[in-house]
Length: 419
Image (cartoon, rainbow, N blue to C red; front, side, top):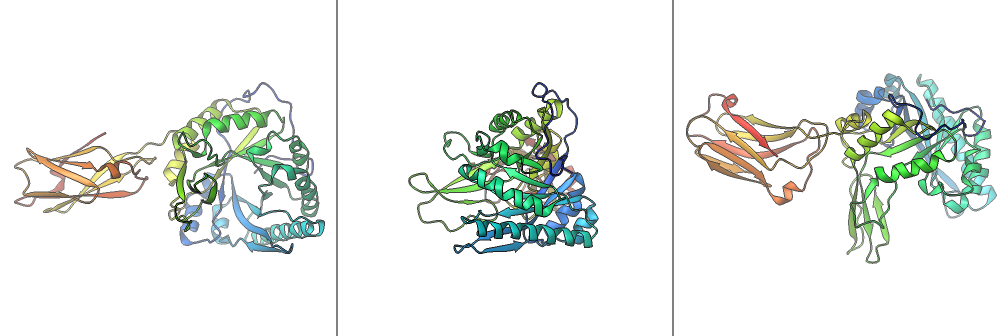
């Protein structure tokens, strides 16, 4: 659970020299942000939920219509799965925007309180411990004072429940931020954003170098805080003037207008693993714990696989590991499998050796080429295939080889993977 005091504002403590809190394991949590709890989502929570101290689960989104009315999209988690996970569950209530009038803002506050109470009641009925209410609102900097006043209402209505907010890096330089933090019980600094002005370098959802800078700014506030790191990739759509058309964070890219430039942004496992390793050795003085956005799910194609997140959580750089699987006798079908922790481009050459004479035939499937020389079959990826990373747990069909006579066993094959 987050270590914040209720109804006392964001807890402060005397700050020693930056990074002098010592090392050791970081307390780590994860967001389960899927709005539809499919079997794959339930399986991910069942298999890996216990690896985290707390789960932040989508509890609802509050949308404001043009006439000031608000509607709620309710989160519908699988409570039986969460109960079996045995972890505290924090409802995350997403706020689209605050309305312009006082009455409408009160309506938004009421909707947030109602969604949080409904989630807590359902959790209690299922035997699930409910954690703090996490309010997720990407407030424009100029409206931070209004947000602070609005939080007073929400926090008072939910007392004695703790209210934690997510915070944008763009708030860190604002003079109004300390007053906002006085009106909540904790804050999670999101160390991910979309800076599309730096396209001369590989853009990232979560830049480890920038994350260090933002954390240093947060330290100057002298308050305990959490950070959220990203595990997902995104596609940004830009028009001819390099202005954002849209942003795809989940699922396939939408049907953007013709001529839209699509820019891929990723989350670098190696860079974030190095950051976590450094924090395990010597973390900033006020950093309490770490949140990951989001839990890997088998059907989530824009997210890391579980082995990658597990390695990064431990501060270990995830790397691919290659295995060629041979099946059948004549022909022998060959498949490349990534059994490692990280994604990576395929090896540049896979050499298949066998005793005896050359094969009668060998062929490669699309994306690969094969040559046979003196009893060896050498498979190499095409330039297009070399540019595509193979994620952990996935496989890629290479092709096949056939002899004049059936090979007694595929175990006689000698397979060499060359970088």
